[in-house]
Amino acid sequence: DTEVTQTPKHLVMGMTNKKSLKCEQHMGHRAMYWYKQKAKKPPELMFVYSYEKLSINESVPSRFSPECPNSSLLNLHLHALQPEDSALYLCASSQTLQGFNGYTFGSGTRLTVV
Amino acid sequence: EDQVTQSPEALRLQEGESSSLNCSYTVSGLRGLFWYRQDPGKGPEFLFTLYSAGEEKEKERLKATLTKKESFLHITAPKPEDSATYLCAVQAGRGGSQGNLIFGKGTKLSVKP
Image (cartoon, rainbow over the protein chains, first blue to last red):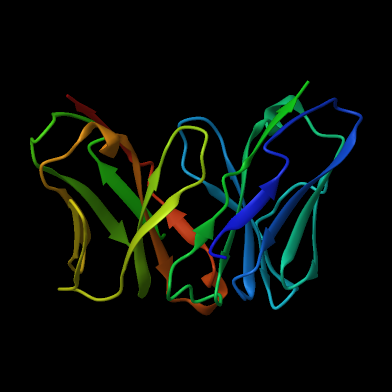
């Protein structure tokens, strides 16, 4: 298995909703990442987990809450989002933080906040 | 400040017309330079990692090269299916930045039949 699987592929939520994005990989990678990508912009790093511990939090608002239950799973919990949070949310993984063999990205979750 | 600049922003080619995409960077201790291809609404697809000046890697019609200041992605005899946005990213060598890929804004390539 050489993939990063993200669910759901599309999500529409209201500003008062609570939802979660899920990411799963079975490549034995020990670093996992959440990126946010707005239309026609490059991905922007949100969070980094290394060996299930939060390594980097790029000053992301608290309405985004990451969780890494085990080495294969990464969640992003969403609460009280704003319309400007609408974007493509990408999960990625690498063997370690050094990323010597590259970073594998999932296909993303297209989030729309209404 | 670590920075990645890609040029051109957009490139239109005829099928078979070879060209190059540029990625220039300034970074404190380059740990690696990455090329990705991204189709609309999809996640980036890994193409190459380059680690040191002079390094070259090839995959089908694509060839990536690296100098101390920039990288080139050469596309030889492109086909319409090569149409995509090509992203360049660097990872800095500073310990606190490990795991942080710094992306350029990408080059949108369109190949017409």
